[in-house]
Amino acid sequence: MTQPERILRAALSLPEADRADIADRLLLSLDAADQREIDALWAQEAESRIEAYESGEIKAIPGEQVLAGVKARQR
Image 1: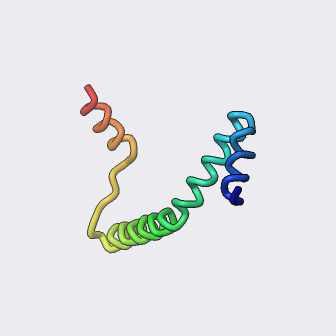
Image 2 (image 1 turned 30 degrees about the vertical axis):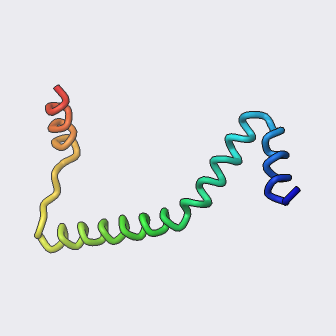
């Protein structure tokens, strides 16, 4: 039996909550590279928006106004 098979067999003998935790951690480890790239892109976007706001290229809208617009569209 290979090491991955032994690990899988041992993992399958664990309680459901522990198996779910292991599965979640394994999935997160696979997505880690993608998440770093996504985080970097969001940081770049945030910086771009801050620069646009500070230069007067765009204006801020109060949060209450934005939420009121969202609520109005949901009706």
